[in-house]
Each structure stands twice: as structure tokens, then as C-alpha cells.
Length: 74
Image (cartoon, rainbow, N blue to C red):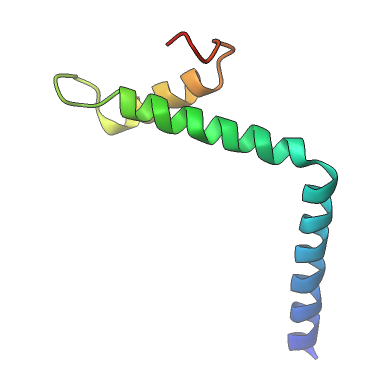
């Protein structure tokens, strides 16, 4: 009985997630853009010759990825 409830919950959760993603595709696009920006800034803050530790690189990358700076200006 409990197993059926878990399975029904999982199926319902997947169906709800797919419905939301289908209705609001801009959220996924926004997330993907932010992920790509973060990845690019994280690579740009390469530690070679830099005094930044990994935590600082992550924080700076998050701040830069969430800023309103145009994509061409870094």
C-alpha cells in the first residue's frame, strides 16, 4: 500500500513538473542561461596566477552570473 502511494506520488510529481515546464519554458531558458554564465565566469577566474581559492571563485562567479552586465562586456 505504501509502495503504491510512493509510486503514485512520483508519477504525479513528474507529471506536474512536465506540465509546468511545458507551460513556462522561459524558466528553463533562464536557468540554462544562468548556468552557462556561471560556468563561463568560473572558467575565467582560473586560479593560475590568481590568489582566489575555490570558494571565492564560486562566489564571484555567482555574483557575476546574476549581474545585469551585457553578455559582450566582461
